Image (tube, rainbow, N blue to C red):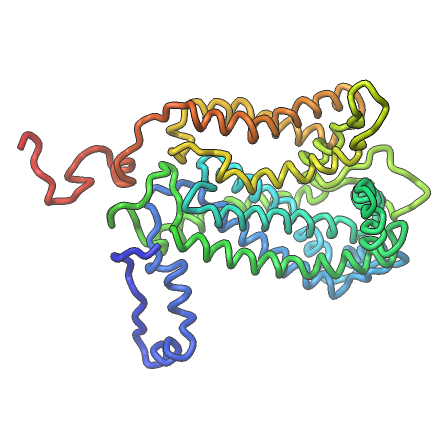
Length: 439
């Protein structure tokens, strides 16, 4: 969005003038995150997660590049090379733990960022493209994380790769060829490791490119805010720097304290102990589960245990395994359609009383249950609970959200962002030219 009151970059020295003429990078940075980018004055700490996600991405790329210098993508030595990094490489233990825990914290931030978008309807016009690119980033992060989990070549790495790639075999006709193509054979081995290592190294840079598009798309309509009211006047905004750089810096400090607590005091808490056992194709673990950040979608996958038949016959239309695969991918793909499923005129959940109830007492408990059930044994009562939670998940997005957006009566919105912050005092809102009370 073009703000007429935004400050423009003016180079002050001969060098900066020359630089601005030849390569206007300082002007670009100033316009993106400096005083040249006005943002709503009422952003709370829920708007810190974008910066935190960017920090996590940079952390993963830096630590991953260094780890790649010491890793060998070969089934005979992959596990040993991981142990070599931990024991023999200078600070190798810290780099590996930083990378492994960094992935977990990256997904913590992404989930918080996404659910903030759900509550404040960040997917609504005019920010549909920002949302769609964000979902693409999440999908790419999921693919990158899955392939990264395979690289240590422990028990959970091997069997996780076998189970997840085996899901493609459920697709009729083309499923088995796709599975063989992904693995480079009929089971995870050297070819799979090489493929996954190459893609795991490449995709973070693809994610970085999509992040640039995500930020670019954000700068066109401007940032959203907790009220959902668009910017109307200069008093509604403040420069991103120094106000929000300071606020983001504080949020980053809190984040780093928590991250370092895990990194130095409980680095294996978010991992699986079976992955410290070398991969053995002849020994199946008692419980095969992915990393915790895949749990909700893994629970949805396992919720489908019965084939879809033609009524009153034994003719199978869709096998249970394929139903689970379709549901697992649909659980994320449904997010692409949120800008058109939610037709409510109000964005912020703070002014949507009915939506707020379904969000806090429906969607959030459902997601908490899916996170728990994805790591539980595939037995009763967990299967039944997974089926109930999965049913509500899709019901919320495909049925409840569209109906609520049509029937609910939103609460009154503030006239402007400034009014939401400073109250209804006309002098505070409109400035010194406001008429005195009673005139």
